[in-house]
Length: 203
Image (cartoon, rainbow, N blue to C red; front, side, top):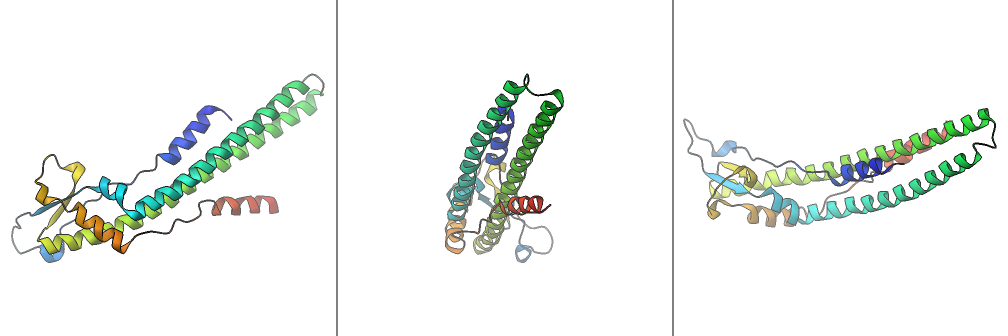
């Protein structure tokens, strides 16, 4: 397995990100006619970085990344050994037998590559699902904080060039988030992989 495949796999796993959230105007805060905007600012990067639930999700994700890195090293070593064995036997095996073993090696490589891709996709999906759950709670809490402060529009900090510190609702949202959602479930991303391997073995 080449280094390009390995680096691409690890980069894709580690590069999973969460989209910034905008809180829309609560219906209860709207009035007939034109509504004067009362804006709050939410630093979603701080929420993602400092919330207990997000920290827990990243910790679980990183455990699998470390596990997969080790698996990749092991697979690479095995494939290198197999390739060396084939090279050494090229002159002692008949062309037909040698070609058969080459095809078996290529098939094994393809299977390992497919397994890594499935693990990558599963880990991405599990991580994103956990972060979506956190973001949904952030939306609810932000709406509550906005109503309590008479705010009718909450914007993500990264979309705001300048703002008064009094407009920031990040700390209030973070405190409520840690209280209400200190952790979220992180599903086993290898469930589908194990199931696929079992079905393949049964066939």
